[in-house]
Image 1 (cartoon, each protein chain N blue to C red):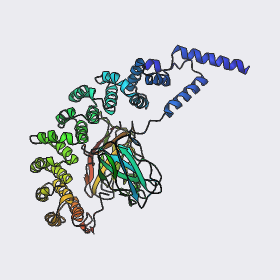
Image 2 (cartoon, helix red, strand yellow; image 1 turned 60 degrees about the vertical axis):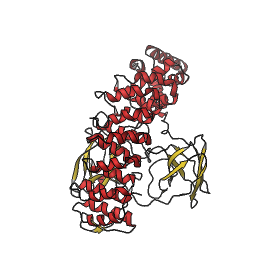
Image 3 (spheres, helix red, strand yellow; image 1 turned 90 degrees about the vertical axis):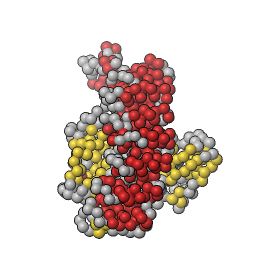
Length: 299
Length: 259
């Protein structure tokens, strides 16, 4: 009796499955890994799937398939589906496909498109010198995520990006200048020193002070000491922060005075930097009017 | 494509559901691989040395200049043995190395109080063998508090977590650090955001803080996670200055997928 029951059950299952077959993801994956181009196309299309976790799973498989998936991924860079476009661009970036630079750069330049941040990210991953001007061009983009990822990508490109950034900074202002200053600061290349000193006199001086601190060049000390008198407390804090990394006796004297700044964080950073310069414990007045040592913000 | 994947429910019986459940469990169980980081790579040079005291169970993490020094490394050594020695094959180039030993034995995740870690060491590998002694003292300090554990104060942070489309992100948390490296456990963690993506964190004191938001809790962000630091693209996060007695508002953190 039980035997008939299970036989019927199996027949029922089979008839259900033949009416509307389930996608066999394992088989599709196996075919795609074997180089079956149709399977790769089908797999890459699944990057548009909205089921939780599915697109991420397909993405990992696509990356493992690697080179064989590249032509299909290139076809999807201009997809109207924002998720498919995002995953395809991310995959091309992860796979460091130099041939994808023109298409990804084009997406980055189309301001009406969503999720362009991934284009900036991918160009940074590909890492060719050719992407430097493309990334610099979006440092003043309207979208803050595009600006942020472009800055990060330029930092990743490192020395390759320095001279184009220095040339750009000579004329830049606003968000574009701020992004370029942050990038050269993190690359820590002294070829940027003069242009950063020039920027330390302008509207982006708070950013320039942080970048000068990262360069650790003592010739920036005078500009930073002057920054301790700035009317903007954020600028004073950044100047105090930067002096800890490069300051000498002159900086120590100036920081001793800003231990009594009106703003708590300026006092705190003055004390922290004084400890870094002198190697001795320094007390500052916290917001409860108690004299305490600053905690070590850098491990 | 979507239609092919769907299963018609009208003919499904209990066994079909069971089969489907098993299949879904199988698919879900196919875990993502760890973020791309090489254990070793074939190359021309060898970076080797000893972690003093000597220290056993330490991994050396090697990054290229410009990489996030708290994200997946370019290369990771195998754990040091009883002699504290490590060796790693690397292509010629400049690198930043750091030794870490987590007390729990994990290879990834935040370095917390009680773990060992070295300073970041710049090293140039140019053919042949490069010897590098490393000191990795025990890290002291740090603790984590959920904001619910903090007595409501007049000092804090408020804002919203958004995704790359500018939409609010639900079920995410803001992690607050007081150290710029953000490598330790967060000092404070917000409650999960609601559908509007908004958060509010009370802090015991004003000061300089560093923020990140994510949809998962614990361990380094992995492929597919939503993660974002409050920064402007720099290697170090941006400092957020909170004045005593002030709720700093409109602090927006954007999270994107980890690729």
